[in-house]
Amino acid sequence: MNKVLLVEDDPRVASFIIRGLEEQLYQVKNVNKGFDAINEVMENTYDIIILDIMLPDLTGFEVCEILRGRKIIVPILILSALDTPHEKVKGLQAGADDYLAKPFMFEELLARINAQLRRSEFSSGVIDFQSYAGIEINMKEQSASRDGKELNLSSRELKLLIFFMKNREKALSRIAIAEAVWNLDLDMNTNTVDVYINYLRNKIDKNFPTPLIHTIKGTGYMLKNKINES
Image (cartoon, rainbow, N blue to C red; front, side, top):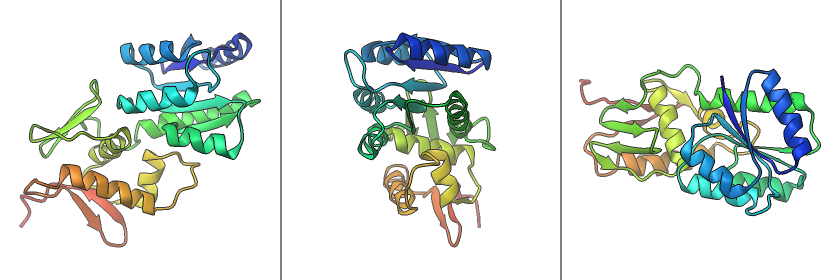
């Protein structure tokens, strides 16, 4: 059963969402303040966060930034009456994975939740993904290391590395990487993928004798340990 943290201070909206999700067999916890949401995420495991912007203490943008700053990579879907392009861009830049404006149809909310859950599972990836070629991922601490050296990855870099680890030794297109690591609906060009690949390379390959991220001409990228290849 997927666990949802709903951060919403309007009792009517919260009740509507909770009822609909529970009918779909989701387990929902509702908090109505930003600090409560942060504490809840730090103490418990959730599969997705639905986050309002206008909260009594912090804004949803601030909650996003704090969680991403603490390297929490749980998908965040902002649900807000603020629906201007500026607000949407601000939410995505704060670290949200999706943004849905109020009023909304529950069917669309459910579809977006399911899409984020599929994406976060990095479908078709290997199950035992946390250790490979000297790389170790600590999901509890949201951190990664190579040969015992802490890599100090951002939340986005960690998501990118997890995707590579789950699909190691496979050629991955830029589009596949963008769909898995970024929001599918986000209007972004593939250069963004290349930029983040470069960020990740500088942390997991630089100062190590064997590079792990390889460019596949005409395709994209691959994570592979080639040390034993002739």
